Image (cartoon, rainbow, N blue to C red):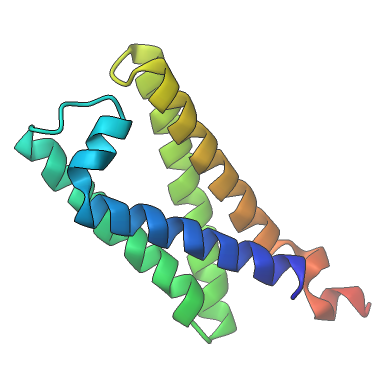
Length: 130
């Protein structure tokens, strides 16, 4: 398995684990964020995040068309960069406690890196032949 494929599968796994956790155990996810797990609006938002994240992860495993996969990875870069910036800002503003904010920022930053590695031209077999 090349680095590009490994990065794509790793990112898919991270997305699926986090998405399923948000869908099936939103109260646990809320506690991990340092939030009140009894707030219905938060539970709803976490479940929406979970659905989004599961779909994004499944795309990386199920898409066979190279153009569609490249598009999914490009969109993923923007999504995860936005997630990282949002988590960092929430930590800075105090709307998330420092520990969970740092963890969320780190996870999203790793996800950005994985999308970039999965798209990296040097990792494609056709790019190495030239």
